[in-house]
Image 1 (cartoon, rainbow, N blue to C red):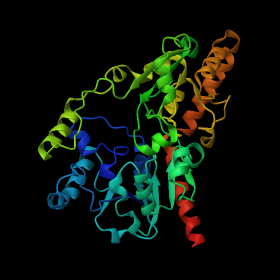
Image 2: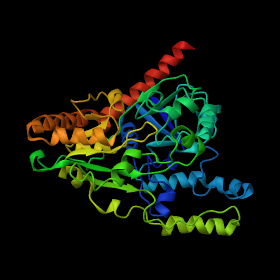
Image 3: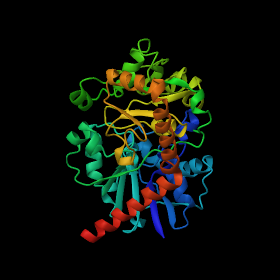
Image 4: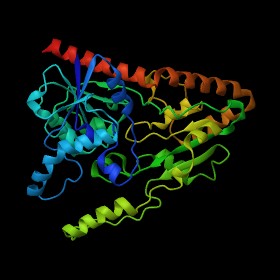
Length: 405
């Protein structure tokens, strides 16, 4: 039986709702929960959670002597998280010592979960690292390089799509396992295409990255420039787009952390920001599934880092004709003009593409693209297909590496 070992699974908000999220009543984006569910349903797989020395995740920045004591609670934290997520301890084996990881295991860490990479360099089994929510920082590159992964996996091949990856991860000579996002079951095609608004529904959060590597490569901290351009020009574009984009910083009342803050002031601000800062109230006030179904076309502007948003899979699952930048989706098997409408990433081309498909004589073509995209999403972007494909690719890469040793 193949063992799949997640490192600090209980700390991974893409797979489970973490204890921090429960305590502060925050939502989670379970973008890879489908993979965990698929593995747990697979009789040929044993799912394990390796809880390493950095596995106490509730707090991290107390003085070292205090943390040394708190870390003894990491297994209790894991047990609580599994229970809160209705995950039976009988189905997920806890590994307490690195020495209990076998050479034929597949060990999975996440760039977004630094604790999962803490001692990965000491693990001799096959190691895979997810690059979801890639940021391009040098410190992340150094951590992952030290971890010495056998393979990286992500929703795109970053070596093809991301300039900042090519610059700061030039040490990585391996390949990418590419797997698509999986839309949650609630994203359904429920409204006839001909009854929809003949415009494009534009959605997505606008975030900013101020670290020097990002500024050096891209010049501006905005990570989703097309989303911001559409929001800034919403009135000009209203005959083409209905803009529901949202700035991550809107509605916030954040207290800034200062070097002069003492220990108590720092944790007061941590508590305040977690409990008093409302984010994007307007953005979360509408039903996303209904909005997708209200429009014939949709757009979720990609990150300048070279990564699409999960919204493309959600919109296609709702029967929209998706507009995306050419080159971001071909590795997923999508074909421009068949499964989606490609544009060059400029407002000018976006308006021209939308205007073309808004014309009465092009409605049949638009409907055909929406239908082909919907069917593609149903057959390719579902839990079983994506989970099976990702597992097979991990196992195949593991075997290939063994043969070359």
